[in-house]
Amino acid sequence: MENNLDTIDERSNLNRSYMEAGVDIHSGYRAVELMNSHIKRTHTAGVFSDLGGFSGMYMPDLSGMKEPVLVSGTDGVGTKLKLAFATGRHDTVGIDAVAMSVNDIICCGAKPLFFLDYIATGRIEPEVVASIVKGVADGCVMAGAALIGGETAEMPGFYADNEYDLAGFAVGIVDRKNIISKDYVSPGDAIIGLASSGFHSNGFSLIRKVFDIENIAADAYIDRLGVGLLDALLTPTTIYVKPIMALLETHISVSGISHITGGGFFENIPRCLKEGLSARIDRGSIETPEVIKLLMEIASIPERDMFNTFNMGIGMVVVVDCEQAEDAVTILNSEGAKAYIIGEVVESNQGVILW
Image 1 (cartoon, one colour):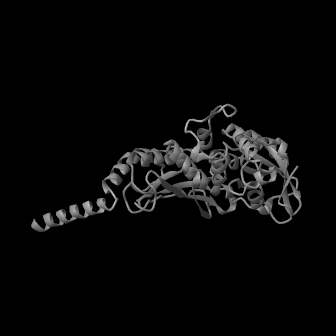
Image 2 (image 1 turned 180 degrees about the horizontal axis):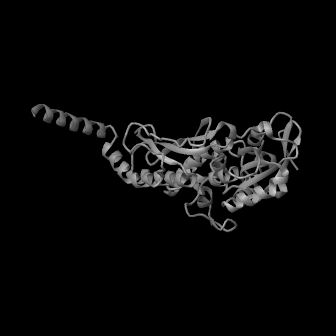
């Protein structure tokens, strides 16, 4: 018994020493308690482990699949987090973290199965961490993915007080025969755009500089936006999983999908096109959100540079046979997306042609 008491006393001394160094493990325990309810609402039939283990386990349903292929994607939220710090709003950036990964893996036709997050901060504030995880859970519910684990790291001296980083990764699955392949893209195919909710999670180093975010009032209101500027900028990334999955389950022949992230149109659309083909985009058809227009006007950024940096109002494009384009638009819109035809595939090596 004495040995057990000695061990407990030594552990208590160690905990006090760790706390004096800036790490409060009890705050970590409290954060886990607060986030638990958010995590549970994301659980799907495949979840095979409880919160608190060393790893997350998932048993996928492989019925009907001949050659199941696992697909993974990872990303972070980037300097958009600075807006969360400035406003004290931490419940939306988790959606961004999920979106940036799941929107990538659906480009090959994979259905997201699960997600894990990573939060690193200088000092754990349980309520803030729980708010972040609420957003992650919201994003997972939107994507139909289970949040099966993650990591919260307290790193005093590495991160400033009240700041953190947020990243994560998703794993999905697709039968090999159903993988979306650019080999089937042909001249004349229609390019459908799915509307974005704004800047999503890209270009915020430039956005913060143009709008002078560090010096703007947290409640600064912009009439043309109809909301506060920071509220508009914090609008989370749209998650396209459900409309895309619904489309792939129909008769529509989908030959290409691209997630429009960093690098805008010029970098991302060609990734779903084979050699010798380009995307001719009718820029006049694109409905660009006011907040993106505002940035372009304030900074006098050339239009081509905007299309090379931001999504300009289109967060994802889908390439389909031109004869099925209208049906595809109807299906996507019936699943909650705002979709419309923005161009076509042409024979060219220019990548993206704006006209």
